[in-house]
Image 1 (tube, helix red, strand yellow):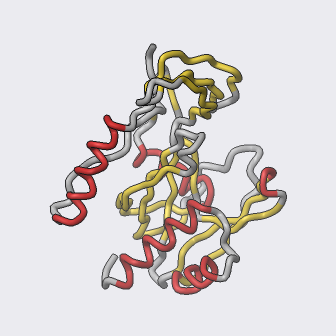
Image 2: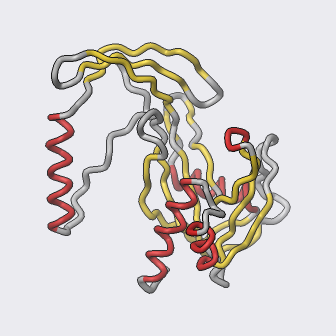
Image 3: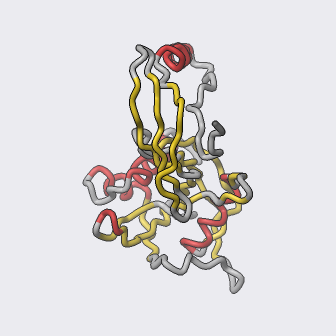
Length: 219
C-alpha cells in the first residue's frame, strides 16, 4: 500500500531548547505507542485536487476501526508585509462558509506526475495571482495542519517582503476566483483576529505568528 505524497508525518526536528525537546521526545515515543496502523485503504471519491479515502485501521489494543480521510496535496499561506507595515489581505466568497472571508493570500500546491510542487515556488505564484504583488524576499515561518482529524492538508507559512506590483505580465487569479485586496496595518489585523472579524483559521494562525515575530523586534 503506497502512501500519497500528500500524506506527511508531523515534524520532529529538535529545537535546541531543552523543555521543547523533552516534549518532542515524548511525542516520538507516543508515535509508536499510540499508532493507528492502516491495513487497508479504499478510495471513495476523487475531485479536482482532493481524494476522499476510507482507511481501515488497527489500534494499539488490537481493535479495528475505520477513518474517513480527505487527502489534500498541501497549501501555502503568505503574509505579505509592505514597507508601511500593512498586511495585504484578500476577500473571497467561500461557499462552505456561506459568505465572504477576510484572509491572508493562500493556495494549493500543484501536483505533476506524483510530485508535489515546492512550497516556496507556490508561495511566489499564489502571492502574484491573488494580490498582483511580487516579493523580493519570501521567508518560511513554519507551518501547521489545518484540520488533522480528517484532512491531510499541511499549510506552509511565508513572510513576503520587498513587495512591488507586477506589470503587464502579471499572473492572473484562477477563473473562478473573484478577489478584492484589503491592505491593513498588521496591528489592526491582530485586532481583527481578536474581535472575530477574521475567522479563517490559516489567517488567524499566520497573523498571530507574524505578530509575535514583529513584537519581538524584527522582520
